[in-house]
Image (tube, helix red, strand yellow):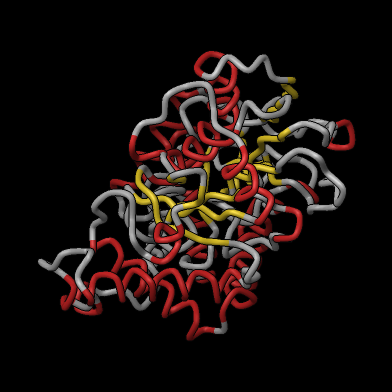
Length: 373
């Protein structure tokens, strides 16, 4: 088995961020007209606004919600929301993977809010029915480093007093987000769109805007976090007038991905592709006794950042496993996150082709056989 090598995936890009480019992507598809121009020029503003309009259309975002491009990737967008809106009410933080843990750290050590902390081990999720919605609530919709997602939005109270803050960076364009349940959402282009890093997207519902215009935090805010002026939301941020200078090359790259997504059928088609990829990977797992899912419950298992266990594998074994496949150009960047239990993490978002997931199975056999011979 180890002497015969299987057919290579056509595109062995399985990283969970930055993720695979769309199948049609080439550098020639980038429109150069805005490059070398000010982002405040007519063309710069137009391209930024066009990018925002495409995101709104594909996310099926209601007119009640604003969408803006901000600095610092998903992390910057989420911290911007935390630092500008928290402190008005008690806070509950939910964590079942490393990024959720990061928001706990910010709330406890940086903002010193003394939040209620609800945690679960990697592969599981806290009891969502126990969340107190008189509090502001911070959570990841899909935990990129654990592969755990919330099953739906039913647990988010319609009559909530607090705000819901969803880190949705590996969920948007792949999972259904009930926008009436979400007051704040963040993501970055580098995940489900296969875009470039460094830029975040901030979505604000009307209750979040009300908070921003009625509450001033006690701590100082750096310039790149300021969303209001004179007690009013800076509306230009949500029309393409970014807080700091964006990379127009990254914007054009995101537009290529968004136009591709629109052409294939929009949000429903993207979700269908991710579901098909996750199903193909699940078939691979079920056919092998030495592979398993870190997330045992299908209802909370991600269809994007799918995390796998390998029988009797430690961190050293996984490192060798991933390197073997990378050296063969069979799979790039599939070792699990450094803080997660040792295992594999395979991106199944819509920019990956199902045929490449299917081609990965024999290569997993090849590497496992070589290391356990």
